Amino acid sequence: MVEMIEGLVIDLDGTVYRGNEAIEGAIETISRLKAAGTKVVFLSNRGNISRKMCREKLSSMGLDVSEEEILLASTIAARYLRAHGEGRKVWVLGEQGLIDELCIAGVPLAERPEDAGWLLITLHERLTYQDLNLSFRAVRHGARIIATNSDRMFPGEGGDCIDVAGMIGAIVHATAQDVEIVVGKPYSLMAEAALETLGLPPERCLVIGDSLESDIRLGHAAGMRTALVLTGSTDLRDVRLSPIQPKYIWNSIRDVSSVLGIERSENELREEKGSHI
Amino acid sequence: MVEMIEGLVIDLDGTVYRGNEAIEGAIETISRLKAAGTKVVFLSNRGNISRKMCREKLSSMGLDVSEEEILLASTIAARYLRAHGEGRKVWVLGEQGLIDELCIAGVPLAERPEDAGWLLITLHERLTYQDLNLSFRAVRHGARIIATNSDRMFPGEGGDCIDVAGMIGAIVHATAQDVEIVVGKPYSLMAEAALETLGLPPERCLVIGDSLESDIRLGHAAGMRTALVLTGSTDLRDVRLSPIQPKYIWNSIRDVSSVLGIERSENELREEKGSHI
Image (cartoon, rainbow over all chains, first blue to last red; front, side, top):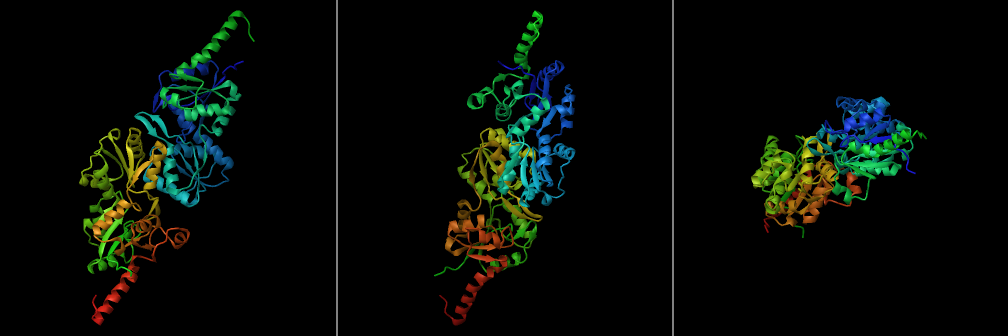
């Protein structure tokens, strides 16, 4: 017996939008599903924005969601450091959105890199040499390294862009000290948070994303079904060459109707026959 | 028989100056040696400045040298690409000084990262995210990676600073493509150029520098004598922990008189006795 899909775990970059532009049909599709009662959580490896910023971005595209429906690597990193950071102060190689999430979670921030017990690394699109240098000094003075995620690239408006792996590589290569914790997809902290938010067992959830390495791997590891969309960083050639195989491959998130639609049709059929279960 | 020291291979950062400040006694010591006829070449892993910029910096500190007496990793990288770059265009992750050296050597530069056959990486103290991203794209479009050097840190005015290893790590970690060639110390391209400039066999040369990993290793590999100065990034504890052992350890380059002085004294002695050899 195949369980109904009742909850969707939806990636953002490359699945819902590219840069500041919504992917064709994504907003309408998600709005319709939400209106029909499908539970949704947005799960993004973005560590450089806050949930508030993300909600406003989606809202500007015409999609109304609550902050509770958004889980970012910044959110989960902040929660992790509150629970397991041992009260050590944090130096951030990243942007205001991550600092906002840390403040909301009540994680103490270091005023100088020399005072930091943790260096938290995320994507930093306004990075300068000085940012790298201060983070380098934090680690040289004993800070342990945690990263919101370890993605190599993300689909931006002008093509693929270097992601947090670049920032991690800079610090790790220059200090010879490894990253201790990576929070983001495909690792389990993100999947656990998504399932808790949805309040559903993994068998009734579907992960939709554009990355084999982060979205599809996360789904497999957590026991969820998986759908790869081709609107982001992955094409069919990548799929053929990868050991990671999604259950579904879709041109875009619009094709979600192909799996939910069948079930809806079956429901409608049952309704027509008066055979509610 | 111990050969006379006739040529000095002198490191710059941490040996002659720190940041924009001359190290106490360095300028006077080197001026005196040059006036006495000792052959000198300055050998620096700096890839972000040109010989002209370096000569002007030394001149502003009171030391007059010619550009021919200066060999930078930028100089040698440009010469290498002219000789072995197969005419491919170069994208630079670095600063104007390196671009100047490439132009002087007649190496073609790429106008867009997509056109580059080589990505040349050096220290970039005004680095931005956009610089990293364009270099990332060069490699994604097929550029091979060459670096002026692979130092992890250099002694700056506010303490140790992240060096080109950080820039290399960012690109290598995000693209999963390795560096093919590292030009700078301790590798042989720099030693060969220094000995050619001095016109002396290695047995008559002494390398003076603050780095075990680059200066002292270069000296050992090339068959030169070596002196470590403690005015830069290395302290006595580092020396005790390292398998790389210099022949001399000096508080600063001023102590060079301890080895040249003895020989001078012996010469003077011989002169007094009228026993010229």
